[in-house]
Length: 181
Image (cartoon, rainbow, N blue to C red; front, side, top):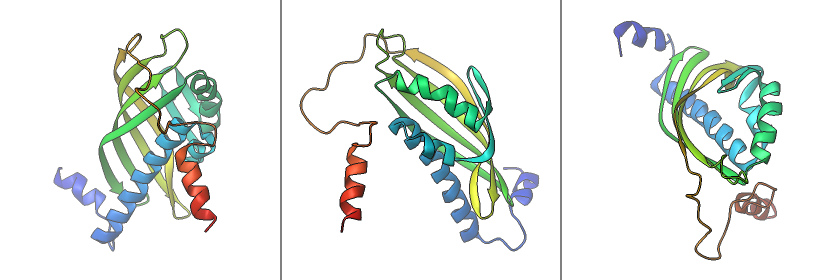
């Protein structure tokens, strides 16, 4: 990192602990977005953005509400998606930050096999802390590559827990069980 960028990142009065807490909060925004997409919890996706957030995806540019309306039918037409976040780097500039997250996302169950694909992308996010809450102000979902998985999906090898997007996912059931304590 250059000296200029390092000095711009480090704010007077901030501590290493404050920076770590900010970076963790930003990372959790990215994780909530992925969980929301994969579990078809679009309120969780919306919550990853500020209300006036902007999103730029392949085939889409607009507000977070327009993004939700655009992505909903695409996700509902699939059996599922799974987003993995790898490299994640945050540059802090006070109450704004640049977050870059490498993602591999698999999509399956579109019916004709055309929607069975895996892609590599980077989420480049302008994050802002407003009223103490970090969220996406603007996102660029930069598609780096796509691979067709048509004809490669196989059924599960046996009985066992399966991910569900209807509110009965094992995560939801575990939360309910713990809440009942």
